[in-house]
Amino acid sequence: MDLAAEVAAAAVTRDLPGGSMPVLALEAGREIARRCGVAVREVDEHALRQSVWPERYLRNHAACSAGEQLRLLTACAAVVGLGGLGGHVLELLARAGVGRIRACDGDRFEATNLNRQLLCMEDGLGGSKAEAARERLARINSSVEADVRDVFLDEAGMRELLHDADLAVDCLGGLAQRKALQDAARDAGIPLVTAAMAGLTAFVATVLPGAAGPADFLGGAGQASGEDILGTPPESVALAAAFQGAECLRLLRGRGPALAGLMLVVDLRSMTFETLSLG
Image (cartoon, rainbow, N blue to C red; front, side, top):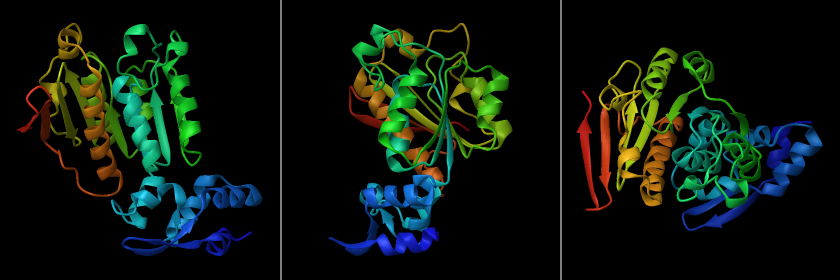
């Protein structure tokens, strides 16, 4: 069965404030996938190639073109860490339409995670962060091909996770593994988008392969991090993840990074923003 023809036949025109556009309703896309024996993502890809917007992405249309939405759907992001930052970033990438997401974390939820971690619920304490992420992704977006691993990565594991990915996302807590992840991204030849917070201050940076990054300056294993000393209130985590997710989506849509060689520092206590050079 010709998927392109199926999509074209099922598309309907919707009137929007900026004009009209062809749209593939969510249930229509699912029915085509079932009838043709293919993944929903494949149907959505055929739609976007014809400038037909899958209904779930329609509210993205003012932020990106159909071609950029297609780039998201065919991209692969590798997310390391599924705690405060990772849970929020995972949510943003899946809802925006990143088609392939690899993610990993070998940790289990504990009560101190409840203040900030999107994936952490009272009835899930003691459970696997990776399993919670896997279940969340399946409920959010059936177009996402999710590879979620319940494991703490060593350096070899990081290199394997990042192989053939388009982007690495550093959602680690603490300082111990950040330099190893930055080096793995460098070796894979892909950008790394990193973020962290300390109390009401958050930072986000993009590290291009071979460039200096925050991990070169903030210390490593055996050193207390800012989050250990000043804590991780929910507003700082959500803000850092929002900026981190925005930079990831810029890159995956094919636009240049906004923070290459730079570190954006946000202080929620004073509501100020500052951009520092990492060069």
